[in-house]
View 1 (cartoon, rainbow, N blue to C red):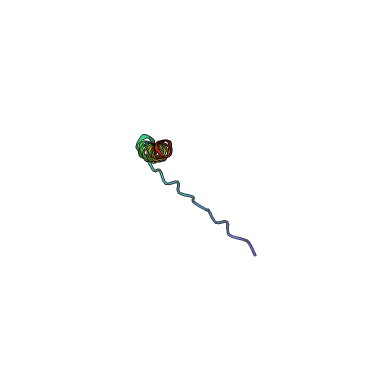
View 2 (view 1 turned 90 degrees about the vertical axis):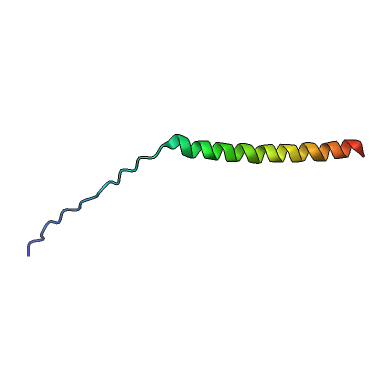
Length: 51
């Protein structure tokens, strides 16, 4: 018996995204979280110095 050769077609999906927008949102989220943490630590440190 002969094996029929099958052709496998792999379709590549082209996705065009603007990478800058994704990273910009991530950067802003990280900076806001970092700012909150720094302000929290400074607030606790000031409370420690006052007491």
